[in-house]
Each structure stands twice: as structure tokens, then as C-alpha cells.
Image (tube, rainbow, N blue to C red; front, side):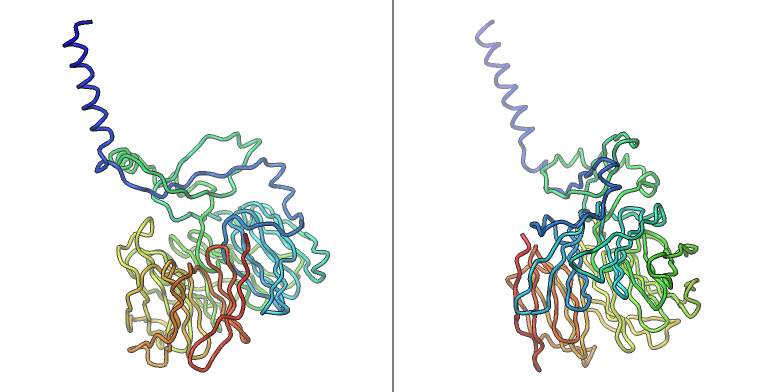
Length: 408
């Protein structure tokens, strides 16, 4: 080959590679990849095994002297909390596709994709799966926070998708833009997949279990605790993420707002009102005349800013915004008396005095921790974040760390 021609080809190749490696053309994206298991393994879920390291901490649930910690899409870690200063890992309940649980009178209800599992936990040394209602959580679509969703063909006669693994990957911007232009939104909405949410999607009120999915309230009569009766679903909108109860009302947090339902007739929740806000990931809690909603912007949540919305619900039929405070990246929140606890993601746990909603006073800020979900119990505060279970004791002017359990 002519030497000059060879040099020209090398130069062209170099220029081409340089263009391909142009860092400005790339960006980091959150990519959700499907997690699948065999149908046989899925259907034998409910096994109780010895404690094991957590892989991805999810929501928490407290019942009597025990704490249940969700391991996203895999099951539930059982923690003996009879001594909050020294909690002990007790067992692991293997439940494929699990995200939420709720407990009443020693019966534990857990989702396993579209199935509802019932466990007898009256003897924590001998937990038993006593019922499995197949396909009753018909649209149990739980989307993780991600910017790209990878898809793969699976043999539905042999495998089932039980969740997602979210990773950060560097991708060409133009490829991602083209991907979004070709997305079939309706196909995504119909997929039987899961989403990692913040705070509860299950709520027991008296003899009823309410389980929200992407757009409905699934209603179960649990007056016979071991044998729930699947009642008619109630359509509630789109992108429903969380559920909270106060008296005869359910408060649903969605990516576009807060929906309020009346459960005076508990088998048929009836729409009362809604409060709309910009698209964002959000849970809601209620105390007195106010609902407290955290909005987390960025990534797939839609909004560009994050904050705390305080909504006046003194007229339950006409909720109105009372005040908004900026936050960094909040997830779960909770209330105990005049204290408001906010898990502000990578910015730690914030504690506010909410006596005056127009002038919240921050009384504690635990900065060097990652926070996700919180439960204010009567005796102490429980918080999960970054695979660590924290507990705090209440003080007159704030809280103080009581214990710290690494779940890895």
C-alpha cells in the first residue's frame, strides 16, 4: 500500500475515533434492566430461611416488637426489635417480586407480583404461608426510577419478570433520544412489571386491605384474615405511588398530585377531591388540617425541583396549597406530635418543628447518611437508608441516635 495512502487512512480512523470518544456526546443514565426467575421458583415463594445480607433495601414496616425490611423484589428481612438499642436479624421470607406488606392480628399480607400472599406470623419461629391468591393484584405495575428501560424477550411459559436492577451506564445522547422517540407508551403501561416506590402501597383499615397499583385501588375484605375476599377495584387515576389513611379517608400520592377518597362505605372508596402539582415522585402523610407531600424531581420523576408541599385540607373537598419549602431529593416522611421527619435522600434526615406551617423550624439535620423511608412509632423513630436500619429516641427539642444495624 502507498505510504501516503496508509497515513491518510490512519489519520481518518484517528479522527473518526476521536469523534466517537467526544465526551460531550455522552451522558450518564439510570438504566433499569429486567430481573427474571423461573416460574417454578416464583411459585414456591414463601420459604423462610436464615438471615442473609440485604441486596437492595426497600420499605420498612413495624409490628409489635418486630421490624420488616423489604429487599426489593426478593422478600422480607425479619428483625427482632424487642431491644431497640440492639436489634437482631431473625430470618428472611423469600417472596419473589415483593415490594409491600401489611399486618393485622398476626397475619401478614405481601405482594408477589400479581399474587397476594398471606402468612401466619403468630409464631415467629414457625412462620407459615397459609394462602396465595393468584392474579388478584391485576395491574401491580411498579416502575423503578430510571431514564432507560431495557427489554428482553422471555419464554413466558418458563420465566417471569419479578423486578428491575437499576444501574448507571454511560450512553450516547443521540441513541437515548432516538430510543425515547420510539417508545410505545401504551405497551409500557400494559407490561406486567414492577416499580420501586417510596412508602407504602398497602394499607389496612379495619376489616379491609387497600392496595394501590399504577392506577387503581385494589380492595380486599379481610374479615376472615386467612381468606381475603377480592372485591371490585376502584379506578383512581395514573401513576399512583403511595397510600395513607386518616379516619374515613384515603390519601393517594401520585406523580401528578394527591387524590382523596372517602371510605365511609369501606368496600367502595369514593372520590372526594384532588390536589394537582407538577410531575414528580411523591408520598403523602396527614396530620390535623394539613397534608404533607414531598416531591422529588430529577431523573424519571419529571420535575426539575424538589420540595415539601403543605396542603390545607380543612375543607376536604377543596385542598389548597398552604406553603412550599425547597428540599434536595426527598423520599419518605412521617409525623409525630409537632415533629415532622423528612428523608431527604443523600442529604440525610431532616427534623422540623411544624407548629407553624408558615415557618417550619429545622431542629435536627443528620447530614452524613442516605435516607429512604421512616416510621415514627410511639416509643421511637425507625428509619431505613442505604442498607442500614437506624433508630432514634425522641427528645424534647429533637431526636438522638439509639441504634444502627447494618443489613448487608
